[in-house]
Image 1 (cartoon, rainbow, N blue to C red):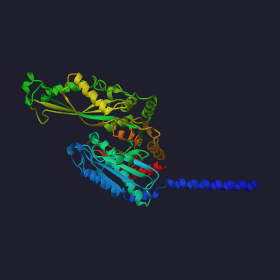
Image 2 (cartoon, rainbow, N blue to C red):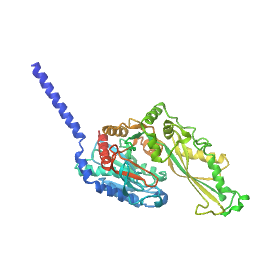
Image 3 (cartoon, rainbow, N blue to C red):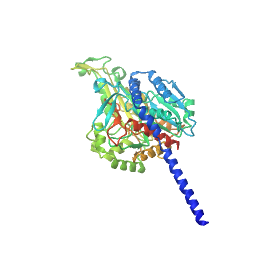
Image 4 (cartoon, helix red, strand yellow):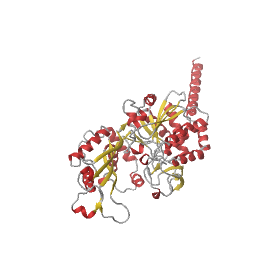
Length: 499
């Protein structure tokens, strides 16, 4: 009797174990979706190329409202039941929802705008999205927006197409928001997110994520728990504002007796940083900066051992870090140090040959990167006060965009799902406290939403904001996902979030 009972219990346990194993295998069997991804490859690549051809550049007022309308078209084709323009005081945003009747709802952030470009600097026209061979990587698509941000976004949208084409229900519901001004500092994005209807929909989400080509040249992926904030400003020095110097361009011989608004601006800029221009010296800018915590420093120490310094320098085309600092300190500064950067200076004559003039006006475009406990508005006030204190109060300071830093807890659902999928691919992600760059995640992570916000995606690309920006389509490197494998990573991520 006891023996029969034990055998019965053993048989039941074995049956349960086999059933459970089959169930787990079924959960991770996406072969039907993969079949659709392969079948739809050419169509998906054409979709991305066409999107790159539809340029929206906020700084040039180019491609509006066409860019928003095109974004809506792509969303409806991918299964969103509702997708509409949200008008703002600037460029329009987009709000969309996909209700799959799922228990969980996930937020999505997209940007449909791109940076400016000069076609003369590119090896192929930046709006043609030409596919070329890149040694060591495979076939890449070259075009403005290829990696920042249309490539990863189009890859994610193909994941939705493939799930639906496989006859599956979407594993999660979506609340989608997009903006057309990220590349000028997202000045009107809060008007999209905090529209009552949009904000209420976002409050139902377990978190927000942004598609991202996360893999480095060696296949490594990095998880970031936030991003720096940013302030973009234009400083204008002119004879009219200063009350000194000319009111129009005059002959340069007059420099002997007339002040120069250009030199006035240069002198003002030199007060914003220390002697080697590596540290901000704007009074009050850094008084609230939160130092890196012991946990964050440990993250960075681990990252420094695992990330390839030589590859990081190679991909940027640099030979040395500031002050010849170590790799660890370079990573610490990327996560924890505020910066003052000159994006460009405009003034006087810059054409062929010389033109002996004393210009009446000069403009400097700056960005200030911010870390936790700094705010965009406080940074702007500190800059204005600093200039006034040092005798440059006449210089006009115009904030063109910007926002606060963002931080997400390591145990946020969007981060845990991200790490789980990477682990399934045999990748042990490097974790860093925050990006050295910026995105307007603060609208999600700050009250009243207080949601986790993260980036996710296999795949590789580089050259954001630069000529010959590219996104990997067909990988010849087994460590790096090409387009189809990156699509499947989003499929896995969505099902992981559903758990």
